[in-house]
Image 1 (tube, rainbow, N blue to C red):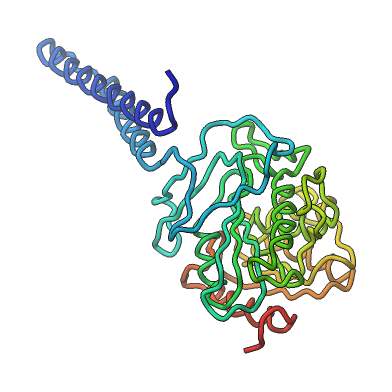
Image 2: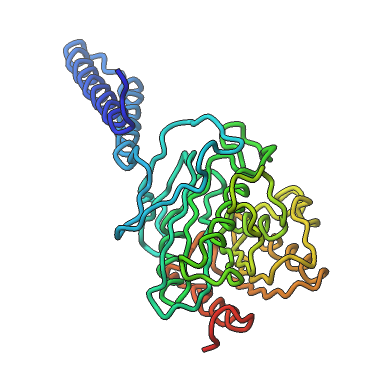
Length: 363
C-alpha cells in the first residue's frame, strides 16, 4: 500500500496520540498501585510527566505541518522551471511541506515555512499598478534549509506589484542547495554544486524568453533576496555564465540581472563568522556585476553587518554602482513587516533607488 504525504501525516499523528494515551494510562496505573503500597516514586512520576509533556509538544508540531506542496493564492499558478530532468537532482528527504511558524512571530504575526523543495517553480505576479516594464525575481531566505515563502516572498510581491513591477517568486530547491549550517552535524557545509543558483539562472532565462508575453522589458529584470536569498542575489550577479548545461532556447538568454537588491545577505565572508576579513571567494565581482542595493542592521544576530560591508567594498573596487543603507537596529528576517525599527522603511529607499537607475519612473 502506498501512502500519500497527508496519509503519512495523519498516521504519524495517530501514533503519537496512541502513545500519549498509553503513557497516561501507565502513569494512572502506577499512581493507583503505589497509593496502596505507600511507595510513590516522585522521580519516576516526574520523568513520565516530562515525557508526556514532550509528546504533547511533538503532537502540536505535527498538527502545524501540512505534508503538501505550497500553492500560491488568488488563482496564481506555479510554473515548473525545468521541463524534464533537473540538473544535479538530489534524493528527497521527504515530501514538500508547509509549516506555520506561530512561535517565532515577526511583527506579532506568524509566517509560512516551505521545506523539502525538490521541484523548483516560479510564480508570476503581474503589476496591479501602471506597468513600468520592470520585473524582479524574489529569493526568499531560510538558510538554504527552507523558504520563508510569505514573509520574504509573497508579501514582497504584494509591494512590488503595487508599484507597477512584475514580481516573480522563485521557489528554489532546499535543503542543502547552497552554503549552509548543517544542524545535524553541527558544521558549515559548502555543497559541490550550488543548485539554488542553477534554479535562479534558469528563471532569469525563462523570464527574458517570455518577456514579450509577460509585458516585461528584458533590460529591466532584477533580483531581490533576503539572508540566504541575499547570498543568492550576489551569486547570480557575479556568475554571468550558467553552471548547468543548456536545456532549450530560454538558456540562450542572458542569466545576468540588470539590477540587484540584497537584504541582510548571508555567507558573504570567506569563513562565515570565523573570518570576516575577506569576501567569499566564490563571489567574484567584475565590471559586469549589475548595480546593487544593500541593506543591513548592525545588530543582526544571524548574518553580521560585515557581510554587506565586504560586498560593498568589492563593488566599489570594480566601480559597480552601489548603494548601501545600514541601520543601528533591526535584527534579522524582518521582511517588510511593520517592526518598531526605522529599518522598516527600506521599501521606500529601494523605490527611490530604482528610479535613480532608470528602472521605474522617478516619483
